[in-house]
Length: 508
Image (cartoon, rainbow, N blue to C red; front, side, top):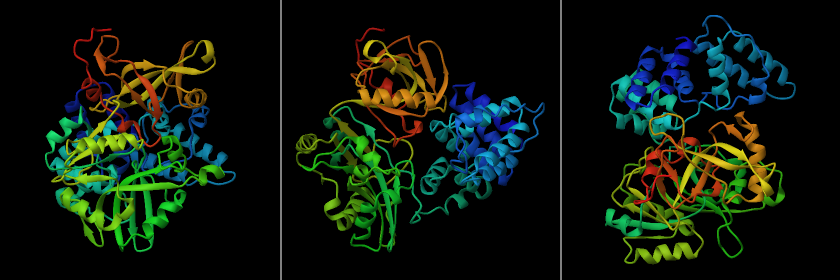
């Protein structure tokens, strides 16, 4: 298969808003791919290199200046092989040979292929919403049930591997995926509820527990071997020694736990989210390294040789209580007074509560209704599309943010509003520098960026509007924080924004 076939398919995906058409386009490509081409082509069309990060930045690619080939000749397999070679060029003095390898690759690519490769390598093609469309396409191309593909994807955590199994071995091969200690699985997600009363009414038999303002973690232990992962399945074991030692001391031999971790003040209240996230990367800052993380676990997916994914939450919670001890997240099974738990959570400085169906199994992927989150303040996670230069005190800073919601059908983010409220001087300075690093283009007033940053926005709801393509506009939006723990694929959809429509508001 030629790279040009993937480039053509990518263009077709961008040209339509129809989910059905996108699925058909992707399924056609999957059927045409050879077995060895499946993994890279799935990666290319979902904007994720099989090799992960390959050490090539936007500036390096922008300065290549290679004359494009006149006719397409590069194959998917050749490009994948070259990217593997480039990823392996590391260490002192690697700049020149890496650039030479890029010159060779881009010299064999047409102009359209060069543009595609730049967007692929810089993450601009990365749209997590397209993962959901690709899952549907894999099911269609392999003629296997969609729920079987979704489960295999949850367990493998890798869409290319899931696609290869489906296309080469069908449902039987997909059924071979199991929870594997040391290999993270995709996390189960929650949906927002309008109120505590609504959430409790939806789940009469429920577990109600604190919703904390922390960072999602998944921990795996097999004997003395411990691994810690973020919600995006990135391993951070080397950065969180205190969590490793804590999990190693739990009363079990093997376990997989889902939870949150927070940095706390001396009086036990949560520190700002950014301080917790600062521990997830390598740092030389002694103050950051000294900031201890406290875990709060809320689910148990495996315990001492027994997988619990398909067990109802009531059984998983019973297993969790056996092993988590003081690190169990505060909550109650079928509480007599859920409102008290909500009040206690808010008083402790947390976001609200989770209301979970005790009969539900653990299922990753789409946000379902089995887990409902109740927060005091309504927020949405949106994608930054651009920012405008500020005025007055903010002269010289990129200030007014252009915000986009995720397209559930795999298209680019859909703009739903702007805001400059809630930005501290520290955030203004940070985003001014960061936005120019991920800049796509600019005019006199605005810097447009690659859609890769997620920001949490507080709002009073949305109103009908013809100003933006989604037909809605945010009301009284303000920045709460950036979410480095989330990818654009984790952002809220345009449907979630529309769900906040305030009745009776006039169009803007």
